[in-house]
View 1 (cartoon, one colour):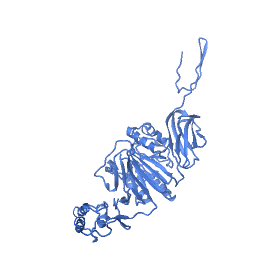
View 2 (tube, helix red, strand yellow):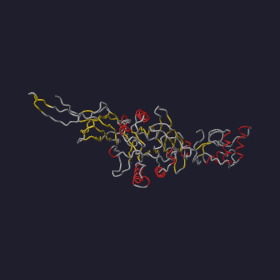
View 3 (cartoon, one colour):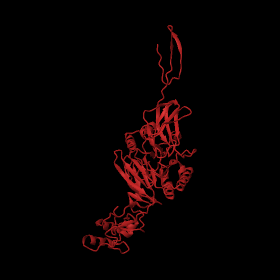
View 4 (tube, helix red, strand yellow):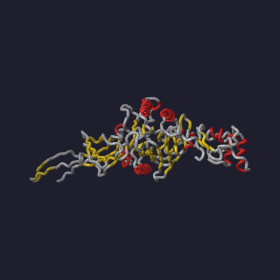
Length: 490
């Protein structure tokens, strides 16, 4: 006679006599298994929280070491199925290895590695960004593989991480190899409402009483603030007041770069451009006031880059792709993390948008005290877009060639056509400065039909050339280049 014991049976012993023999039902210990994770939360310069779930309650621990150093163990005091172990006293900018344990038994053979933030205000950091991903699709898995290959320090998510109402399918499965090594910093999208985020995510500096998911942290030379655009509070309540106080504090501390991330985009020419956007009303004034450098959002399933924008006016767009002390914030939409893509809407307000690309992608940000480098990458590692921002340097002056009305960097027949379109068809110049000065081909001080004729005579009849600045690009330090999307040789 035999009896089958399941692995979840409690420890027990029994004895009975059968045909004169005594048999003992010996206990079979239940071997604890990893149910989720491990994943990193609140990874900063000197601390991190390691989180994992087990299939049965156990007393967990983390065995960790600085790379090349001796092992140390940080253990829980009480058993449970949800494990959170905080490591403190870590050294900034150092690679650490770790394993999660059940007692003294490692739950995985693999030793995971992470890097703490460099000392605040210093060093180089690598950030991956994606959004609108969470359904476990092949496309999400491809983007997750891309992010894993980038080996980021932190992974910022712009929301809609769980369409499936199954975090293991949408987040902890696809990103397991990412978030065990890079801290996962999510924002909440409109498809993430069901998630009891305080039971799953443990970010730093989050208000204890707020329902909305907002928080902030410093990494290297950058200050990041995550917002929740799904709550009315962003339009004038506690969340907005928190953000203003948070950015005030970061500015007072001399933080070099300010980056906001959340779900709903302030500027978009995708499908959501047709709907009223709270973020558009609230975020740009805050970004203008505090000099925010980058705003990252999702919601529209595509990639978009705005011109530098301040006060609802485009500035320094002509510098693209190498921005030097731009007088505005650059807004990025990164919603190509795996879901079905959305197209561009022709009737949208395109004045603020430099680039629209309808492809799955992730962003790579490389940030130092001197520069932000941004690349948008497809899963095949095709560079869809790239640009840089530097600041605390003199802005380059705007340059132009007289008569180059369409701002192509050279004179041709299209410049005369452009001038005639301005005069007789109501065509708006690409920027007001170009319309009033650059199109003044004969240097008379005003734009009129004679400028178009003057260019045609020069181009085709050997007439006199336009006066300076010509034939080389020349600088105009006092030029009002607002709305100018291009400059000479750009």
